[in-house]
Image 1 (cartoon, rainbow, N blue to C red):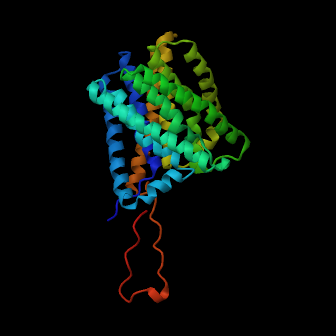
Image 2: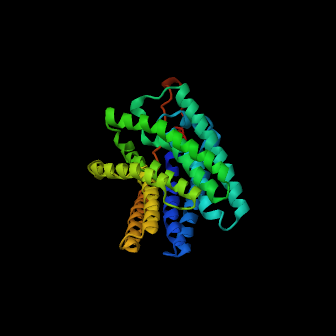
Image 3: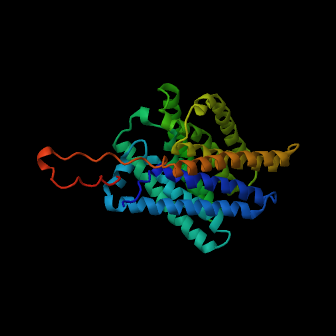
Length: 339
C-alpha cells in the first residue's frame, strides 16, 4: 500500500497548534495560567509536525519529481515553507527553555532552511512570473512569516544580531509583498473558495512583526509596537466585513489558515493588556485565550472528523486505461499509486 499523499498546506496544522501553544505560554509567563498547558500544546504541535513530515517523505521520496512540482506550483509552493517555520517556532518556544543548546541548534538549522527556501522561492517567482490572479496571502509565509518568526526565535535563544537581521528581512518583504497582495485583493476578482481562508493571513504580518519586536526589545510597548498595532488594528477590523464570505465556506484543510494568524493576534492582545493594565484586563485576557482556544480546538476536532470519514486527504486519481491493443488477457492491474 502506497503512502498517503500529504499536501504541503497540511503543515498549517502544526503551525496553528504552535500558535495556540504560544498563546498559553505567554499567559503562563504572566503567571495567569499553568505552564504545563502551553507545553502540552507545543508538544502536540511537534507530534503532528513529525507525523506529517514522515508521511510526506514516505510519499515523495520514491517520487522526487513531486517535490519539484510542489515548489513550482504557484498556489501551493508558499505553504511548503511551513515545514521549516514550525519547528523553528517550536524550538524557540518549547525546546530552548528546557535544553538551551539543543534549542539553539534546532532554531539555527531551521532558520537557515527557512531563509534558503524563502530565497529560492523569491528567485522562482522572479524567474517564472506568477499570474496575479493566482497570488494570495499565503505568499507572506516563506519570507514575511519566515523572517519575522526567525527574528523572534533568534531573540529567544539569545542571538540578538541574527534576530535583527531576520527582522529586517521579514519587514522589508512585508512592505514589498504586502503591496502586491493587497493590490491583487483590491483590484482583481475574489479568490476561489479553497483559497478564501487565506484572507485571514492578512492580520498576521503586523501581529508577528509585533511579537518579533517584543522579543527584541524585552517585551516593552514602545513607538514601534504602537506603529505596528495601528496597521494590525485596521486588518483585524477589515476581517469583520469578510465574515459573510467565511460563513459560507465548508470545512477544508485551508481552514487552518485562520489558526496561526489569529493566535498571533491573540498573543499580541495578551501583551498589550498586560502592559496597559486596562480595567478588567485579566478578564479580557481570559476571554481572548478562551476564544482562540475554542477556534483552534474546533478546527482541530473538525479535522479529526474529516480524517475519520476519509474526507481529509485528496482522493487518488483514476487509473489511466491502457490502449486496447496493449491490454492483457489477465485480470486488470491494480489502481495507480496515489501521486
